[in-house]
Length: 495
Image 1 (cartoon, rainbow, N blue to C red):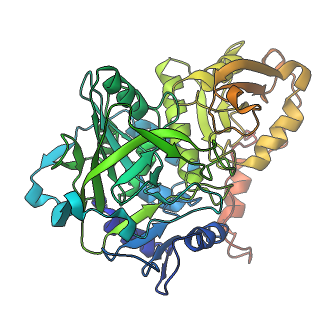
Image 2 (image 1 turned 180 degrees about the vertical axis):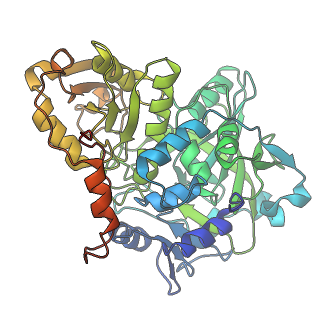
């Protein structure tokens, strides 16, 4: 059993071990060229992470640029979650669901123990324009740093630390804009601080163990820090260190961290930005403005960058399929609903947001309808999700072919589709027009299960016997068949 990954450099070594890391030694322009390579490389199978070792142009710190950290790769998602790279998808989701039940508070270390404090720049020496901060898309409103990041803020009322993933646009030599969707924890922290007439401290790690990006992207209770959930996934406390110009705890093993302050009501025009939907987001609008007070970094730091695009080139797609599903599954179980066999948030559905499939063993009348309603509205699944599909336990929710088969043979649309209106959505949804409508959405609840009242008489599915499957699978290579025998979700009972 390998020890938990300690930093991004160890993670890169693991990605290299499984053959999913590409190193580019030639100079590449951070303006659009890196994102173009990432967009195209993500469509390959396997879809590797790519480390640009020689960014063209200004690069005062000798930084390297890492893109497509997890991308659509379930293997890299698995190693980020401290699991074996070949863990089957539903099993990986099940394990993450269980890990989310354990919280381990972070461990504060001294500044001398923190690799991120190898170098520090403060005051007038700060010049973010000397870093290879990229422009992702041609019509982006500016250059964006740390889209694969961890942004740390503190709740002004209870002191809890939120670790979120939010885009940051370069606004000058020592300023960045921080875009936050309504309802996001960091925005709530900022708004409450401003209401008190107080500025707020912010820190952002632009080179991180990908686990921070995975955990920071999820919705958790607003009084528990993501540091605790990350510790639960890793199985040990996350090492953190006290900031030098803020009162925040920052990841001690990060590659590069900025610290800063947002003054009361300080904003500046930000955007647009090519988002996870595969479309540009909101037009240019005011966003909180961070005055950067310190930069801490390791020698030749690795800056992480997350491309937002259509699938499979969307950075959040693969890991969202796992983590969002695990959150929804966990939320439903907490409510005492039995029979859930698997949950999947499809990565092609707007970065994992747009569609959730739940597999269940129907145990009572209305069971499927109950699960659909809950999966649509529990904290882990309420934001933006549009299509929630229930399938029976003999259907693998991660297998799109089986889900479509169930939709086509078990779903009678006139009876099986319900619509929820005025649900929690996002200003980034291009389907809602005019744009001012976008914060309110709708959800389709689709019951693709066998009708419960007719379970005993529903047409019999043609299935393999387990004994025959095992016999064929054992002879697979001897028969000269390619690869290994695919898995099967259900079998015909033995006589």
